[in-house]
Image (cartoon, rainbow, N blue to C red):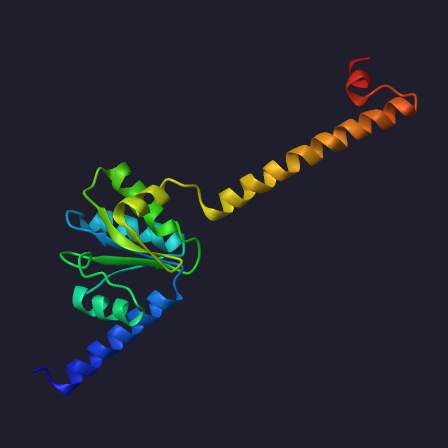
Length: 175
């Protein structure tokens, strides 16, 4: 039976992990076996630059923290496990892990995780990792909305120029 001091410290760790899982837009569990210290430092730097928290976690304590939030990761939380979590771009942790593993030809693997409250498998998270960031997707959609408006503005400007008797801007530049 562990003494009271050890038990209290473990409860504090579970509470901290539980609140991190609750507050995060995404949590990704990673099997980091086979990665060198230098590679781990490079991966941590990429996570830090993207606003993602990354740490090695104890499976049992993380399992308790996940259960407090209504998630069951019994099959995922075994072996070497690290947890990458963010309150920002929900795709960032999975994308960084996948790109880093491909770039460095590492056995670094996503085990599973949570994205905006939904439990996702390793395959689903790997699929998400191939998507552009949330900001890039928003910019693409806005660009799609702006294209017809821009075309309409050009056409209306050409009609205005013709009615004023002047040549359109393209023809005026050629003359």
